[in-house]
Length: 73
Image: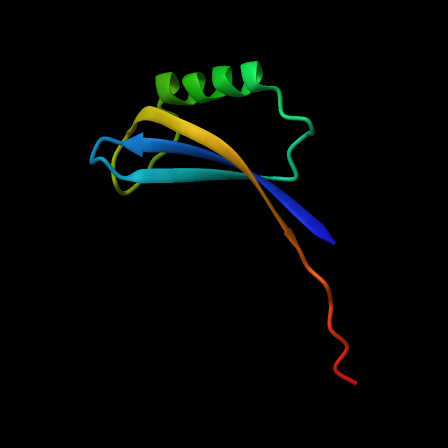
């Protein structure tokens, strides 16, 4: 079974990177819509992090992993 995650990457006021992970994103990811969503998150400041407010978008990436059960019998 393959799991896919969309990671939105931002910088906070203290200079640290933070990530917001979205499981099973709709494929293919539309770069224009994604860029607009990142800008909206920065402008609305709608997430709280210990390292401060989000001040800048850094990027996004899609991660996928495959999990295969192993029989122990």
